[in-house]
Image 1 (cartoon, helix red, strand yellow):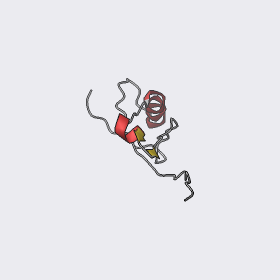
Image 2 (spheres, helix red, strand yellow; image 1 turned 90 degrees about the vertical axis):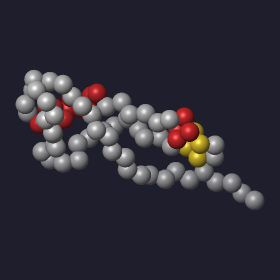
Image 3 (cartoon, one colour; image 1 turned 30 degrees about the vertical axis):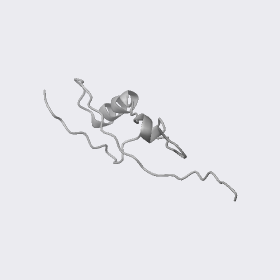
Image 4 (tube, helix red, strand yellow; image 1 turned 90 degrees about the horizontal axis):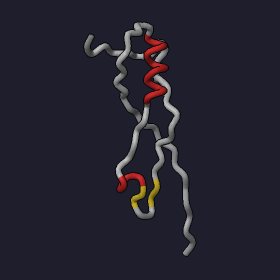
Length: 72
């Protein structure tokens, strides 16, 4: 029986907390993009016959970007 490896593309989300005095949502979103460093547990990253990569390029989903102020 033949064995095949099939790359499948999905979509993931992360939320990055940013501390800054900046008030411009575009600049805050850029800071979040620079600080984004998601990771996967060992089981998710290499689950035997399955393999999952989340990539390293993140962009805000909205224009203007959604920015939520949590505290001062």
